[in-house]
Amino acid sequence: MFTVSVAKLKQAPAEERRYELTGTIRSLPGGAAEPIPVVSPVVLVLTITNAGDFLWAVGESRTTVRLACSRCLKEFAVELAGRIEEKYRLHGAAGPEEEIPLAADDLDFTDQVIESLLLALPMKPLCREDCRGLCPRCGKDLNEGACGCPAGEGDPRLAVLKKLL
Ligand SMILES: [Zn+2]
Ligand SMILES: [Zn+2]
Image (cartoon, rainbow, N blue to C red; front, side, top):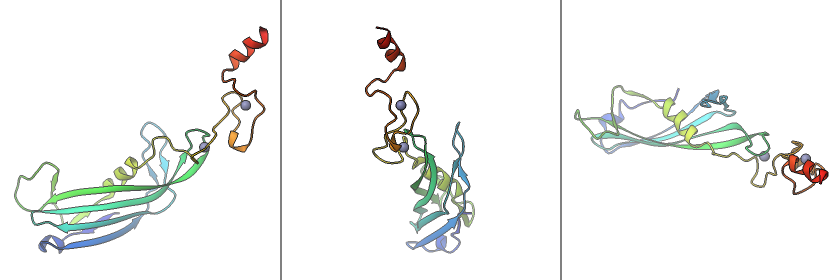
């Protein structure tokens, strides 16, 4: 899907080409959890430079996914921007380890796009910076207003104990 042809570029030392590709990815793998729904087209902007011995690809992937807020559990849209960098060796058998030997004139960046977006996911997604989360006692979404539970008493078992005393 995110395939570019470098047939001409690989013959042109010191030249660079800019590519902009748009594709559809339905979801990102969620690891042990549910897959993460992707809700907008995925855009890949890539610059590939012929650096003599290797092709140097640098770019950015962008899309929007739906994540659950880590505090209130509500789903919301998050824009992701991932970074891609790859080197493809043109000449000589043995290059530095990070250089991939160029095997074909078409380079497919789909795997790199998915990986870069996964790396761009926030560790603790928040629907907004000051999300108030859910009440630990009754589960009400505190962004929608107070729930009426006594303030400052986190553990319901403690509250029961206090009543007895
Ligand atoms: Zn939230
Ligand atoms: Zn409550």
